[in-house]
Image 1 (cartoon, helix red, strand yellow):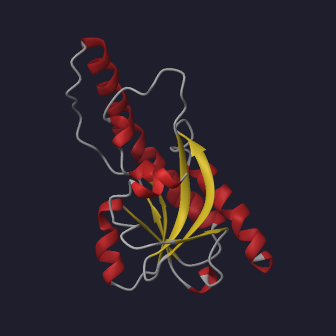
Image 2: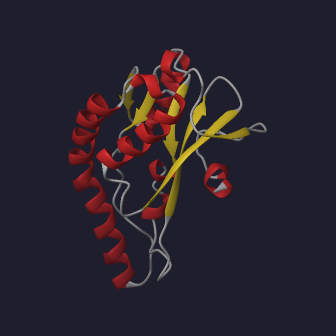
Length: 172
C-alpha cells in the first residue's frame, strides 16, 4: 500500500506523512475534491507487436470509458456523498489547492502508469484510495479497488459512503 503513496505525482510524500484509517474528522465541514478520469495520450514504446497492440487497446479503452465514468461519477456523487464536493481532473489539483480546498480523494489509478505497459501475467493491479489533507501531512486510507473496478463510479462512491457512515452516522 505504501508504494502507491510513494509514486504519487503531486508530491504527496515530500515530507513525512501521518497515515490514518478512515476519513478526516472535519470532512463534513470541508469540500472534498473527487477526481474524474482524464484522457491519456495513446501510444507505447513496447517492441513486441502483440504487446504494443494490447497496450494501445487498453489505452483506447480508457479514453472510451472515461466519458461514461465521469457522467456516472457526477450522478453518484450527487446521490451518495452528503457533504460539499467538487469534481475535478487530476491536472486541476494544484490550482484547486491554491483556492483553499483541503481534501482530495486520491488514488494512483489517476496517474495512469499502469496503462503504459502490459501488466504481469496473473497479477491483478490493486489501487488504494485515500483522502489527502492538502494543507497538512495527513493521509487517510479509505478503500482499495482492483483495476477492473476503477471505472465503476457508483462503487467508488458507495465505498466512500461506507467509510463516512462510520465517522458521520448522523449524515445518513
